[in-house]
Length: 254
Image (cartoon, rainbow, N blue to C red; front, top):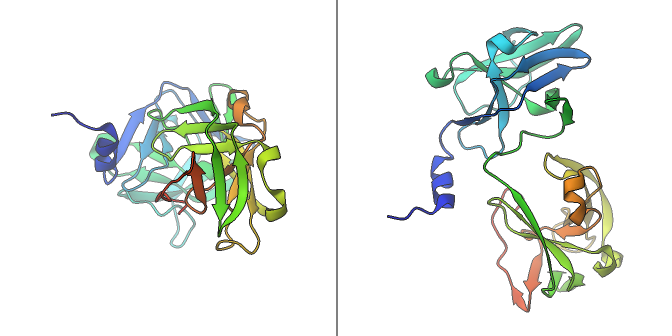
């Protein structure tokens, strides 16, 4: 019987999942080295779609100690013990986690945002890249219109569609084809490990006030095809392609 891969991925989401990475991984806390490993894994905790890194405790050079009650840390969904990391004069309270799973005995999870990460000799940003996801970008002449409460936010026949794993396709639109009179810069910047830092816009007086659009700068040369172009949340706007309005998808940004 044929198996649709996206259904298989969804079936595994409630489980603790991992995949070894061949990259040499290092992390720093301030100017102090916390870990260096050639045995790191990319790990997804149960119910989570965004991965984190975990390494054998033998590859950790910082001091690990049990976290005090109430110390910070992620809301982990796997079984284990919360740890505080001390390196030199720096402390990351509750930012590490010793896994209890017998198949991953001895592995320590580190929160992404608490440390500076290096793969080989390159500084990387954001969470680990998913080894089972990829990005494709394709220029298209499809007629794309983006509307909110009946107002046209953008209209173009020269967008770039970005296909990213199991996420909805996103149309990246030239700035000249965006109705800037309806948008206002938002005080929000987010980080994507694939595309860089995103800056956002709202549509004052339209929708529910949340950001509706974003754009990436020229951080990653491999993303040059979308640099400076503007994408809109399909979850928060009405996107019409070749005259057909797509149903708003249900994602983490709905």
